[in-house]
Length: 262
Image 1 (tube, rainbow, N blue to C red):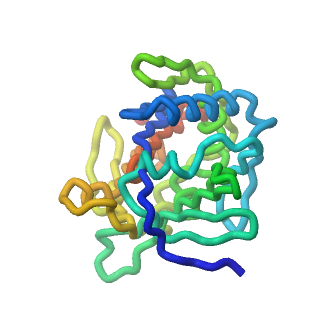
Image 2 (image 1 turned 60 degrees about the vertical axis):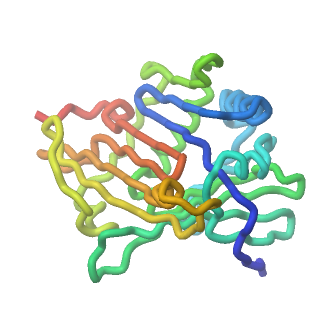
């Protein structure tokens, strides 16, 4: 049985952008050591099957890092929120950050959870994405996006990693659709249109204390997911989200060769 306690040491999520079809990672204000470890992790993704194992466990999309590089102190350095909780494991510990859905009225909100597992050497050995998040970014698309990072070209001067559209795989899987999203998350906080697409905006709030008191720190607790739907087919065309410093955007048309909305 695992023991669960509230975590006190500060964690800091890096500002990261995964942008598909141009997949990019932006890393700001990093110390040299953290930057080098992130580059080493990126290089491991270039030989994905040797360094990473993927599985689905109790609905969670799980990445098992076979040759861990990143340290728990890196996350302390990069994040400005405490995690929601810490669990002691037989061979290490796990940090979790919970994001509760906002703007749901009388309806109970859904929760998106990110879990990071560290081994006894304080190295990141696993990362889990919760089932609700997989409704926005299904496992097939999420794995393809993460694999693509290993093909990216690094601009060390700008500390940026980009993956060209031509290096992305073409998937046979169907993208999420609007009906399913409404079944899981209910009506959006905002609904609008942009470039002929129907846009749903959902908001979440991290159930985690900021490392310092102040309005800017409180703002970091709010996460946003924007979903762009084809108005004819109701397929999800693009998903753009920001959870603390983790920014994930997937253009499903580029991965599935979907036609643009008319």
